[in-house]
Length: 222
Image 1 (cartoon, rainbow, N blue to C red):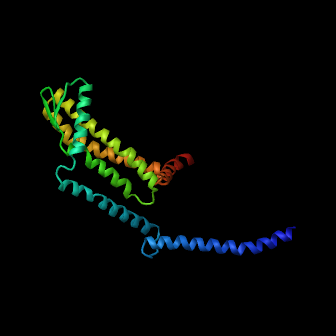
Image 2: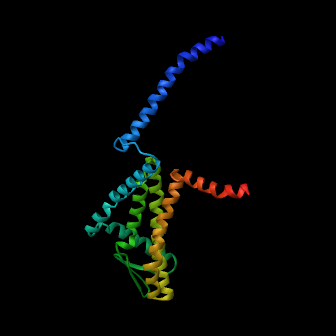
Image 3: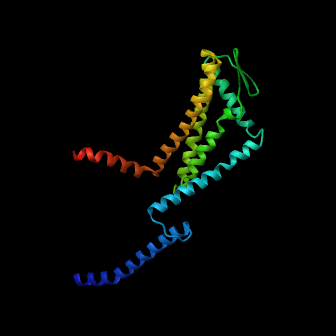
């Protein structure tokens, strides 16, 4: 029986080896096809992926210029943001009223412009998510479905904080918060959402674990 198994192994092994070589060849051909038939080392591969990421980011930034060149395109979003801001102010007891995109809360007049809708930040988080290579479409759509509402809520919080600061501390403080603190805050929010999505999607999980291992290993050896 043992000799029979050896004979079967001798017959099957060359076929399995051939299949394995064919599979490796197909994987290699696919990698070459993505890089134009050029064989890249690890460092060149990382550089190539970075260039692809930047190229995709530029492509997804094109809607930015289209929207900016077409006035009135964001009117529906301005309407939604205006309604949400007025509802939040009334919930807090500000007694706000609205006339189009102009909101009055006592002596405070606040106009919800296109930039106040946070559309650039929402577009940016979508561009970042779709520009990352080698991620399944399902994970990209999940990131957009969660990331965009979070940015929208962050933008509403920004408007609410500016109006509250205006009422409590005056116009100069409100403008300082609007122009400096919350612009940086909204950009930081977008980047945090993107990094968390990268970790969840598994794109930087291995790298993070390796770095943590390098930090912990010397301490363990001591």
